[in-house]
Length: 193
Image (cartoon, rainbow, N blue to C red):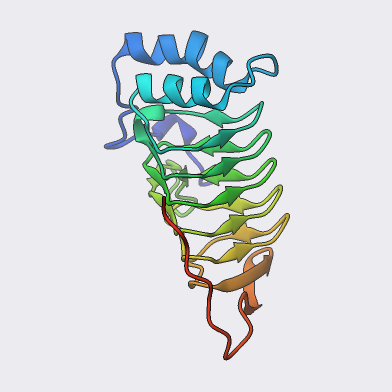
């Protein structure tokens, strides 16, 4: 007999934000423009995100297929690359600092369920990515994860905890394997324009 009681599920304090109209407009129009294979203008896609409440910096590259659940919960710095089919499933805020590369098919998950409770309640937490970090193709970033400046999450890896600045992480769950910059070398300064 199972102890899981999905009929008792509650979203708790979670609210999607935005009005019903803005959510509908985002779903039927904004999201389609963002994901479009035909509309390739990065600036147009950035403007659409801003129109729906996202904070988007300068020089942002948004490839086809990018998905954003709620633009009003998205902060993107300058010169960020969002690769094909990246999915920002932001039930909570996702903050991406300057000069970050998010590769193809990466998934940012800000919410999951509390498996310890029979009612399977939501567990939500924001995600932040430090300047100069690289999130590899088909990787997953779990709720509440902070990715340090210049850290790397390699392709197909799963980040379930904080990644220290300059660390290279790989695997499921991702573990530290080395420093991005050789020991004793001077880490390059990020240029902010």
